Image 1: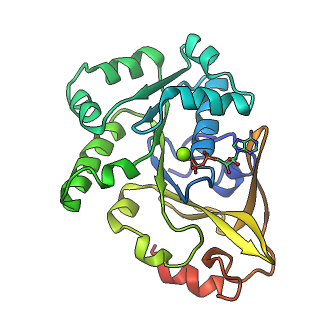
Image 2: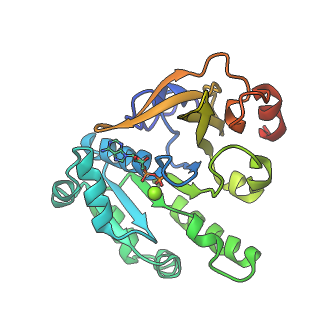
Length: 257
Ligand SMILES: Nc1ncnc2c1ncn2[C@@H]1O[C@H](COP(=O)(O)OP(=O)(O)O)[C@@H](O)[C@H]1O
Ligand SMILES: [Mg+2]
């Protein structure tokens, strides 16, 4: 598995954190509060794929495709043109419709994947599943079925998941074992307050079947997209949002290998 060709995200600094890229046919979770840059990271992954002749599909349950065209354009990415070239497709749907479609051999999604030769997918976001049924167990079942159907499609996926808390406090309680189980890679985006300024932090918490960088790094979003920067130095407890807490013990508390 270590020698299998990696799927490079093309995001500056991120590939080095994940040993060169994602493993093929994996589901890679990116989690963070609103505005941390989950959609940006996902769109950039799809955009970089399209440029490398690895077509991609963006699935959205919440935002209209228009929003993606606009956001992408603000980074200089012409998603409409990529769609014309059949390297990209943005699909807005409901989880139920998508799941039913995936369960049919020769359904529209499967046909689209084949026709485009799609290799990448962004699902923005899986948070939508969580409130879909009164019973959280039922919601989770739906998500399981859905992701499993997608995993059979030979795609390398990014799933985004929104958390409500802005900083790190209370993190441990938010981690859902079943979601961790589904995801092959778990990437966290966090706001961090250091000396009265808010900074952005990224960490790869796990990567199934692969080594990875486990330092907490800064990242920035500018007119070209997202880029990963240097590690936070001498900032114990960065992830908790309170530099007084020890990163070490925090990491130990919730990284289960
Ligand atoms: N062109 C841009 N230049 C700089 N920052 C941008 C640009 N477009 C968006 N951003 C920043 O990216 C963030 C939005 O990221 P987004 O991917 O929508 O977050 P999420 O999906 O996690 O809610 C915001 O913090 C916004 O300030
Ligand atoms: Mg978003």
